[in-house]
Figure 1 (tube, rainbow, N blue to C red):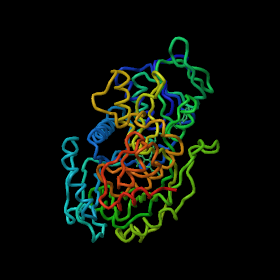
Figure 2 (cartoon, rainbow, N blue to C red):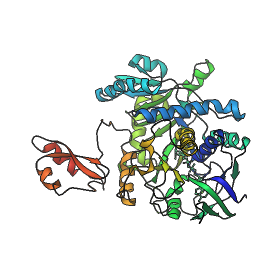
Figure 3 (cartoon, helix red, strand yellow):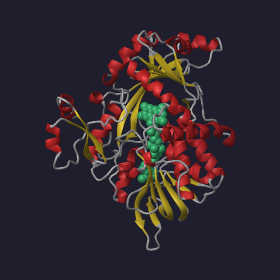
Figure 4 (cartoon, helix red, strand yellow):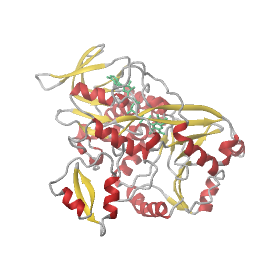
Length: 468
Ligand SMILES: Cc1cc2nc3c(=O)[nH]c(=O)nc-3n(C[C@H](O)[C@H](O)[C@H](O)COP(=O)(O)OP(=O)(O)OC[C@H]3O[C@@H](n4cnc5c(N)ncnc54)[C@H](O)[C@@H]3O)c2cc1C
């Protein structure tokens, strides 16, 4: 292995490969990616590959656009197939509030440069004829979304970067970091040391362990998620025979999950609710866990499955072929930790990335821009790892992660501050203001009164709702 590089990237999942590609495209090719086993061996290889573009935050949506743009060009550029299916995505609204949410999003989508359409129930049924949802009020359609083969897209980005001169070292595990007297970083590995100007950590489920090597308490903990793949579904087979387009990825709040075509069958991925959600490797990824899957946990999502059968009866008429259950990193707000590590010059984080396939391309683009150009052309502060303060310890993260994924499919409202792991920081007036009916929001860990409930009922209800 070389003993010096301008940049060392730790971790060869979709995110690490995306950064390698991003740096190489900007002309920084003296870059070494170190991967403890094989590329994609972390969470990347078993991901469902969805690239869902819906974000109510303008800059987050723009960043997602960038991923789609990058992935769409990769195959032609690298000669490596990436399995991109631009089938679109359909989100079903069954409640007035959800439909309002989608309506208000339309102007956001326009600013983001995202193509989006509001559909009537009849229009949605034309796109998804297997859906028998009588409660549907409308749907949001993104024609440019799709799914991609996670391992292939990772290898394509790595190849694109290698073709430009960047290096990948497999079976190379980073075991420590030291700051040199000259202000560089000495990265220690099982294959020897390598010094560098910049270190970038993209270690997926190992984020907390990598953070510990640097003295950082990284606010991310993996959760367990799963999907199922069915045997051939006659309606899907018939659509293919008739030359019909692939149906869009379907998300219906009626079953809180996603459904898409996979071969001749369907892939069903339910969102685990908080009470059934399992966290993983809270104390570090165990030594026995490699590129493994975990045992199926049907109990965790039996409600979602029953609802899905009600809404898509074709799903229940065929057998199940496979279950895929594994860990991936989660943060308190379901957004990655991308940017400078606090207190450590030239150490950059691309950790805690929930949806690393969705984020890989764009993190590669914007993190490399930040490092090479010294700033970003887009405000990426929503992803800044320093957005949480010293209160974001492991227990806080544990509770927030459970809340974030456990309520993923629930209706959220603008300005809503989720209640888990609160209060963290209160002013001396907290109890008195609570008595007066304060309904609390939170800002950088501090409880702030948002408004005062007239009779105190709402305030009391909100304050008493706690996660165990
Ligand atoms: C069932 C399931 C379905 C999913 N579906 C989707 C989806 O549809 N779309 C989507 O975007 N995401 C999906 N995800 C999430 C996705 O899998 C992850 O978010 C993504 O793979 C994370 O990529 P990463 O590069 O951050 O981490 P990883 O892929 O885990 O890569 C991290 C790498 O770092 C290496 N590493 C760790 N420590 C060290 C060290 N000390 N030295 C050297 N190397 C090290 C590891 O070996 C690993 O290869 C799904 C996850 C699951 C479980």
